[in-house]
Length: 430
Ligand code: EPZ
Image (cartoon, rainbow, N blue to C red):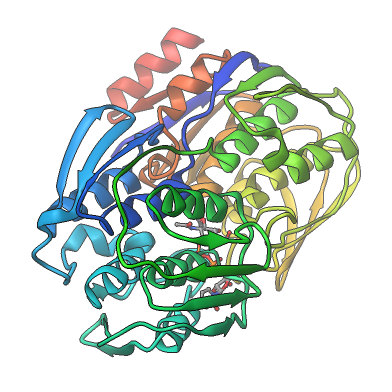
């Protein structure tokens, strides 16, 4: 079983390049099949979830050509199947984007219900509410969502919950509906704006993305386009926390600083230095950092996907911090793993109280999910001694070349898959 082995204690320094945004790319790849013309997408992150989605897109009959590691050409002209059903697509949540894309284009879609995952139950009732409001008949049969409509017409939809997935999914279906649709209480994340910009580059008519009210005037057809994905806000934030927690000095390049404002603000509150450039941020970790409180909220609030990484940074501050997770019901699974490294965190419901400690000690831990896994890597980079992290497949779903990028800024980390390699690494770095 592959695992990361890390020797901690060294402040990170140097430059790291951020890849394209996974959560924008997943929506954009699904939307790419909504035209019969060529679509070229650049700055794709080379991560497992993206590659699984590309496989599924070719499985339903679309033409998929990998131009290079970060560029793909897709043509949805030969799609012969609106039922997406294979084992690996069930593993990624974003498979539900096929419903909005195929329903919009073919007025029919059948997609496996996305599984829950380690951070919560993850219902899709708001997606279904939106599709039904547009005029689709949506049923759940034998573990799949089946959506079909004679026609999709205008609707005024008020989301009961601010949902990234539902906003993107219903926006896609509405883009090819007849009439004007208004989405209220819509999510405002940067990746919503990126998907809307992508659809507009294909001839859609979407206004207001990035605000809580999105207006969509349906069009008959969408045409081909060339588009480049925005940088990944969460990967950037992960490296910002890594620099702060290891008391390092790192230039994080190819970012949109505006998207990182809530993360920068918190790191500055803790006493770190964050310098913003046009397309980069520099984080200089302070030796003595102060505790602060975090509450995760929909954008522009503090992102839930940065909660575990920030918790690790707060664990190395002086004083006690309070972290409130208001988006998902089960996003503190890393706390038990951090306890093995000397962390002192108490969880009551959706609140974690983090007591600052002098430092972590290396231990064998398990990654419970994608972002918690990244947080454990940060803890390992700060820890005294060696940390072994199992279940790193979760981490590889969302971080491209994670260990190479960390080594590039001086981190001592390797991916190993045998006891022999583990011993070799320990000898090499000791
Ligand atoms: C997206 O998930 C991201 N995933 C998540 O990132 C991210 O944590 C989340 O948005 C919030 O920002 C992708 O984009 C692939 P939601 P999504 O719908 O769309 C509830 C990562 O680490 N809800 O915004 O599934 C839901 O239970 C991943 O990259 C409903 O009640 O999240 C949650 O409490 C993890 N009904 C809240 O809304 C619905 O129909 C926000 O969920 C939909 C959601």
